Structures are given as structure tokens and as C-alpha cells.
Image (cartoon, rainbow over all chains, first blue to last red; front, side):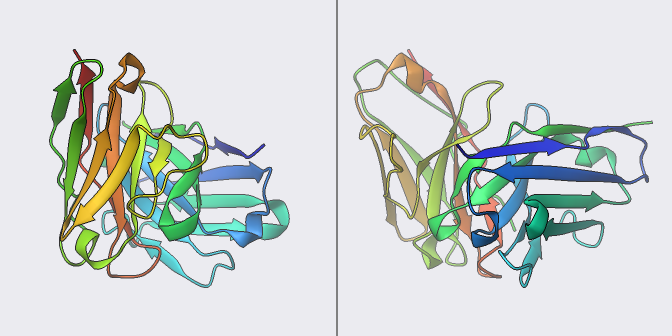
Length: 118
Length: 112
């Protein structure tokens, strides 16, 4: 059974940093690209960042470029998101997702909540 | 990276068919056959319903179907059921890379 378990969320002040983690199991982790998708309270889905199977390709949404860094450790079956210079508008539930054909996301974690507030 | 445009809400009676549109540009929806659709019930993670415009993952009801014409993709739900009441989002590659993605604005489906 595929499982994606996010952790690392919490309450943080504007301008501070936070690191999210996603522990993957139930599939061959290093065969697939992985992504972070977020959802602000009561709002829609927003793609945040994606990373290829070997970390050779990485992409970010314009809204987080230069502040967030995605990475993965295939030996640990883990995906990460380092979030710096956090803003109130980064407040959201952050989902870890697994890619399948055509960039579709066939598995999602339950999310970890990040709240940026003073 | 502008969000794809979806109607805010669509409604129908049980047994009816409804269609949700997803409008983008030639740089995303119109440029690739990589449109996917997700269903999200309140408090739950999204669920993949359609990938590559019209393919259904194993386990998804054949009442759900997808199509595309030009820069607009569509999700049709036939034989509407109470359990179909949820939010629906489309998504597409964009032209920047095979990792860049964009989601739609989301559509609330109400079963009357």
C-alpha cells in the first residue's frame, strides 16, 4: 500500500523558516517524480514545486521561487521542502504527492499545516 | 503560471449529467495531452479521477469521463449521484518543463 506521510508543519512567525518532510512507502520511490501542492484555508489547490526521480530537474511556482527549496533522499525514501522567508500568504495545508503518467498525481498524503503568523 | 479557469459551481439532479470546463492557453491545456482531474471531498485529500485528458485510473467509476478541445478540457459526470458532491480541480503541464504544473480554480459540484 502506497503511503505518503508529511511532517514538519506548525506555527511560525513571518520571515522565519520551516522544513517539511514526506516519508514515502509502498512503491519504488526513486522511480518517480514527486511534488508539493498546497491549499490555503478555504481556497483551491496550488502547485508549489516538483523534483524529478534523480533530482536532475527541479521546478518551482513563481510565488515561492527563491524562497523554497525542494530536495529528496532516495536512500531514505523521503521528500523535503525547505521554506525560508515565510509570509502570511504561505499559510496552507501542504500535500506531498507522487507523480504518475503525464504528470498526474495518483497518491497524496494527508497534508501538514503551516501557519505563518506573528 | 496563471490558474486554469473553471466555473465556480455546477449543479445537477441525481441521474443527470453535468460537465465542468477547464480553460487554459496554448501553453498549457492546449499544448499537451496531459490534463488531469481531481475530486476533493471536505476535509479529505484530493483523489485522481482522470489523467492524460481522458484516461481513468483503476477503481474510478466509468461515469467520469474527460475530453479536450483546443485550450479547453472538460470533465463529464454522468448518472450524477449524491456521493459526487465535491470540489473538482483540473491540472495541466505548462510549457516551462515537464515538472511545471498549474491547477484550475476549482468547481463545487452540488447534487440537488
